[in-house]
Image 1 (cartoon, one colour):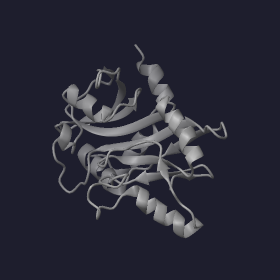
Image 2: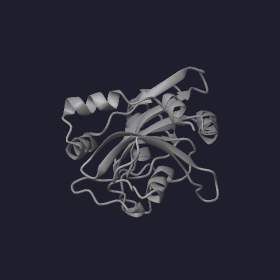
Image 3: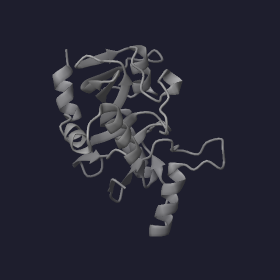
Image 4: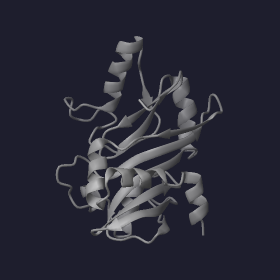
Length: 227
């Protein structure tokens, strides 16, 4: 659990774990796991995810504890009131920074990025989605010829010994719609992804942590990369 109050609980989802139930009744999913945990702890649980992450993507999922909270937070998400920072490892070398401006399903879609590291034919980037289309980050990097590693659906090379793809929701910023307090919810990298990034970048743990700690938040990156 990354954050919790009387309105929401925010959980750091592992890669390869579905958020909702799937067609396979035996497949474990995050909602059921979280419901079971809160049911045992508090006696009541019926969580409602208010943002989405693909099965192969890790990072922060916000879940509302009531229908009222779901409505308030869902409205905020729909109006793109979440400031999101992702980390991605993509194929090839990207420019130092840039904006991918390409419609998806006929709707305006924009993704900004900052290069953090390049070497060995791959690039580690901080990613700031300006809009929130389905599979936006994954599609946008495929469209510019730099698919996310492990993202087989969108042309990424498979990753040996790693479940999911190299995309992580690293930090979420918002104004809490109930308390009106600003929130920043960091989501540490899961250990398998941290090891993968360390291996692919050649950075030791100390250097990689220093690089991650120096990433600009979403607002700062937006001001740097606005044309």
